[in-house]
Length: 414
Image 1 (tube, rainbow, N blue to C red):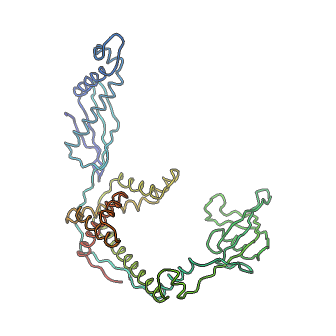
Image 2 (tube, helix red, strand yellow):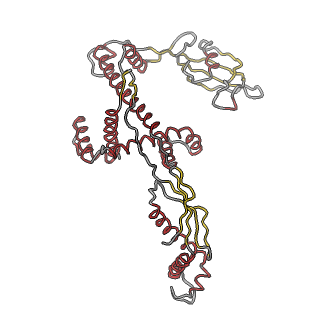
């Protein structure tokens, strides 16, 4: 196709090309479009396809022009991509389309192209690995958390303490001073489930007592209309319950699983914490190393890829439409980092031939099936149905890439 192409913008991953199609080519496209339209329409007094061309052009000029422009744009897109050798990352868009008998067809083509990722510096970095040793205090905190999860709420006497579960009847006076009927609320004192001043008010009451007091809403209250306002609040405390933690003994250990003693259970808890700590330290090392690589090897990101990542986050978190703009602003930085991370790992995997193969995935599935006591085919079918084979392939590739990167750089233990 004979066209004229002029680059108007060539920055980063953005390309803008002014494209002109000569009038002779436009005339040809119109003739072809008119022929197609003539075969499709019916005009009284003429058999299909036999109506005079001038009549067809006059009555269906708009449809003919539309078909001609669409055909020309498709051909022009293909010609531009072929001549300019553009590696597009998204569908190009035509802007400022001009179409006329004498002027031909002209438009500006907006494109995003794949960024050039050289990654010239991948070695010589030194990152620190966080300490992953587990202390007795951490083990005790985990045991206490498990006790807390199995605690029973029991009735308590006197005024509530921090951590108590209370049932309280609360009412807030209207603008004219009218006090409406209250509503029952179940609140854990000190958990931030109510305005702090209201919690303080409740903790001054004994069961059955009622009080009224002016309460000021905090300046950072989520509802902007209520920030800093002072209102009359009436509170009636109807019930107080306190957590009763189970004893940390052999009986507790048996309730938590197949453990003969508290000592055996504590050993398993310590082992689990240690394994988790090692995984977290490994993840931190990888994150820090990637940060170093990103800083040393800057490259542009296609905005469309970042938008796609933000959309994926929004779908995963089920963000309502009315909150999408705010959400996009909040997670844009995280989305950019994830896209950049994926591009770096993919580039290294391709360059160093580290990408997982189908055979690698099959071997991994077989290993997982053996560990779970399942048939390999059964697990493979399950993963395939859930769409997780690609995820498994990705994890194998990333593990290889990070192993390679760690061999090129230094890691110091904190």
